[in-house]
Length: 152
Image (cartoon, rainbow, N blue to C red; front, side):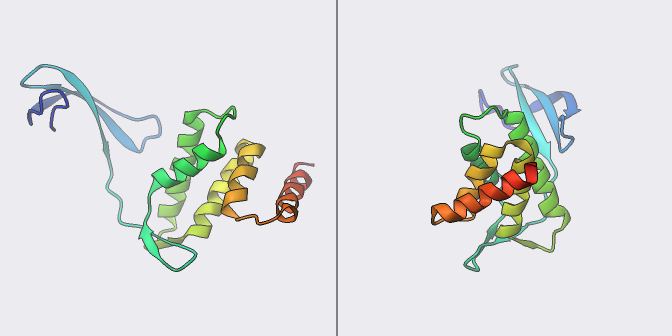
């Protein structure tokens, strides 16, 4: 593993432990050359999963896109980064567990919306507004009414 400080290719592992979510291993390393310590993460390499977009295009699954959408929906709301990361992890796990090599983008959006509905109503509505491409106030109000009806 290349040292981030001196670029030496030799380091030794001084501590290893699983991350809180159990999906990766955190390793503390020490550079043989400069003696400085740094952290690396080891994660299982997953088989490729392709997302089928609405227009039929296919692109590689990218959990960072999901995270960016959730971050945008949760902007200035009382939602922690840990909660966001947990949602991204759950959506990613569901996407890969039902894996046939590809998944429709609509299914990913539905999974994110279900998670946000349980987390924060405002974040849910923000995400839904972009995901469902509301073009008028009526469509937006219909989604709000569904949310109100479910909460009662």
